Amino acid sequence: MRRIIPPAGAPRKLALAQLTNSVGDGAYYVVSVLYFNRVVGLSPTAIGAALTLGWALGAVAGVPLGHLADRRGPRGVAVLMSLVTGAAVASFLFVRAYPAFLVAVCVYACAQCGLAAARQALLAALVEPARRTETRAHLQSTVNAGLALGAALGGVALQLDTTSAYLTALALDALSFVVSARLLHRLPAPEGAAHTERPVGERRLAVLRDRPYAVVSLLNTVMLLYMPLLSVALPLWIVRRTEAPEWTVSALLAVNTVSVVLFQVRIASRVTGLDSASRSVRHAGYVLLLACLVFACSSLATSAWAAGALLLTAAVIQVLGEMLLGSGSWEIGFGLAPADKQGQYQGFYGSGTAVARLIGPLLLTTLILSWGFTGWLVLGGLFLAAGTAMGPAVRRAHAGTAHRASLGTGAAVEGS
Image (cartoon, rainbow, N blue to C red; front, side):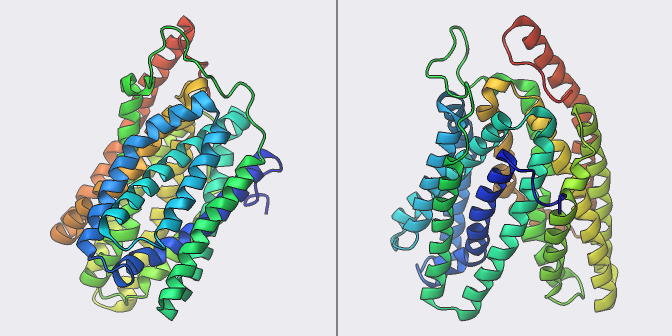
């Protein structure tokens, strides 16, 4: 159980806060689109347009909101963003006009991105550098467990298929963010976390001028394309291009969730600095390439059992690559960020998730459904190229960080 439950203190309290709202998020992810379509009365195109705009704004908002966490303290900003997210979800219970829905979606996405940046900054402030990746792995395991539980509750709402069931699921998500805010507020305020004034001569939003860090973040965004692969492209591939039964989609998602809960912390324990983190991401590129090859071969199987076996094998390989990537990526994101600018740097680094979710569905469905086997090879090549390039990019960014630290213009390098 020590591999799953975080150590006592700040790590366990952070995990409990994320567990709380991830349960609500799991229910939200399952029912939200159908609720917006069947109850609110919006077309799938209108819903998609609103979500696209919302996450595009969220990707931009993460940096200034992270900067706010640096200046005012990550705990207070995390509490505020959690409450704003809960309020945005609660507004979905009442909005029926598209303009109001569009505003609510944009507020929701921006607050979610701001919350992610503030929570990362809070973790960096409360947990010593040597334990940050391990703690982040615990949080990831916790989030997956919460999402699975919430998805089960959302599945009940889908089965009932009534307005009250959908409203209950959304209300649960809104309430979960309020409870999470309360738990975050009970964490100790990091010492020296808040600065009301910027040091003389320091540029605002310095991360936007840190080109080596931007390159690292871009490579990480490419690797994060595995996210829409699981949620969008793979289900369509299974249904349209393989002989496997439709329930295989749920089985593969269950394999992914359980694997992360059980093994993410164990894999993350092998990452102890930037060198091992870069190596972990490089290995993730190889593993994800292999997963793409096996997924591609599933279309060649002539029976449901053969296709299902190939898909299951590919899913196991893929989740290994996902865990290797996460372990290395977290260490890199923390280790290359100045200690007094973790909020804005984590906001920038974390925007890769929003970007991957924004462009990934269209890119991957075009590659995989239109190009078939060749598309899988191209996607695997992208994973391999990004994973291989991460090492040199990290070394360059690390050298720049060390140089700034020696000049007294940046924080001490961590994780090396």
